[in-house]
Amino acid sequence: AAASLCVQVKGAIPSMPERTAVLELLKSL
Image (cartoon, rainbow, N blue to C red; front, side, top):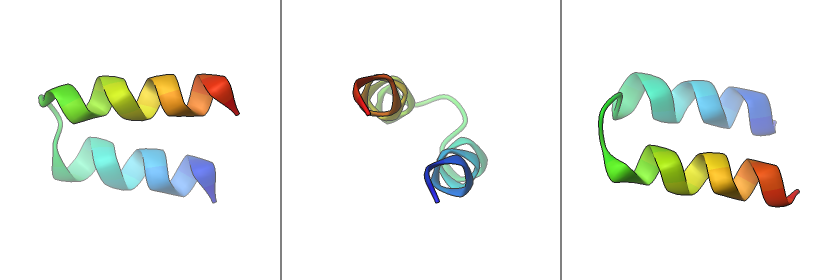
């Protein structure tokens, strides 16, 4: 689930700050 969410975010917003927030979120899991 987390992986597909990461892919969706990368596809939807490839160069936005939210991507970094998502990566930090995944790190904290």
